[in-house]
Amino acid sequence: MPVLILYTSEESFSEEQIAAIQKDSIKILSEQLNKSKEFVMTLLHTGCPLTFGDDKKNCAYVEIKNVGDISADTARKISRQLCVLMEEVLGMDPKKTYLEFQESKRHLWGWAGKNFS
Image (cartoon, rainbow, N blue to C red; front, side):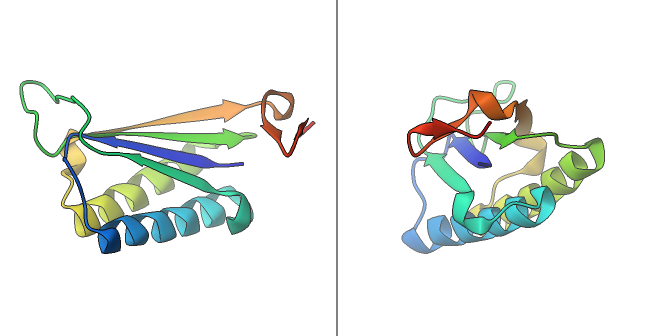
């Protein structure tokens, strides 16, 4: 149910970097949102024409989507953990990273031919 979508201006990352980001992002979302790891999805888009101000390098936009509520405290924890992770693994500057959180009602998400409601 939780989804992490990362858009970055960087052209590419190594397979090891991608695997680390996906594995650790899944762990973070699973633990913080109290959801099973098996239902966490990650999607990485590299080479996006992003800018942060006039700077085109090392920018990121991250969407975190969830079925159900995300408390302010949980969003803060996820923001902190994901920014640390992206800086350590990908070299992404947290000051050039926006994170957007989206809560969805259960009937607005489908899986396996049905909805979660």
